[in-house]
Length: 229
Image (tube, rainbow, N blue to C red; front, side, top):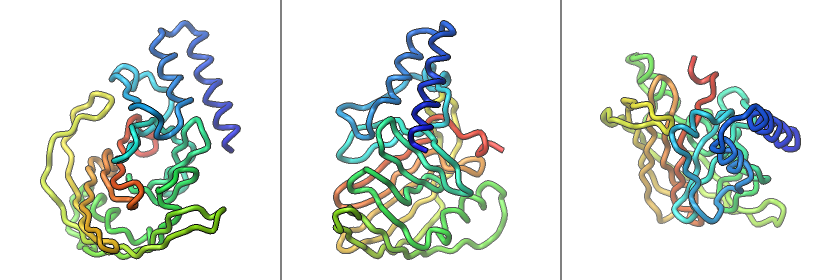
């Protein structure tokens, strides 16, 4: 799958370059070669984002700079993003559930189907009066399965809906989003996560992932067409 992904990625960029597109497309193509959490932030201009041929997201953490991850595949509610390296991150509504090749990111998240975030996103989209769960407990594993070095922690959190606010999407679109706030604790650490939702999807998520990583920020850079329906 990863090999086919990289071949398709390079084929698309090659076609763009051969068709006479400007040098900025080459700059966009170069981001596909950037491993997640490289040496400096990857920041595309609004024009570059709109030229980008794939659904993609920005990802950064407290300790590592921003990178671009391309949507590799869609499986029901989950979205798997991959860099030009062997790193991948699986998210659901902006929440990072699993990863591969990224030290400190979750390897596994239990009970993700009962994440109240999904109910709150749907409620804000449809304007329903349904009562969403306010509390969630899950186990998260972090470490390296190959080296039999895995830590499992139980995380408890509660949710509330914040106020609407203005947010500019990386493609330049001005959005009015609703903040969904999650507060919780793991071991001796307390955290506050924020998810910005609009039109039934999450466009920005700041979330605690592990002591090694701290907070991670996931931002929709180029939306998946299936999420716009």
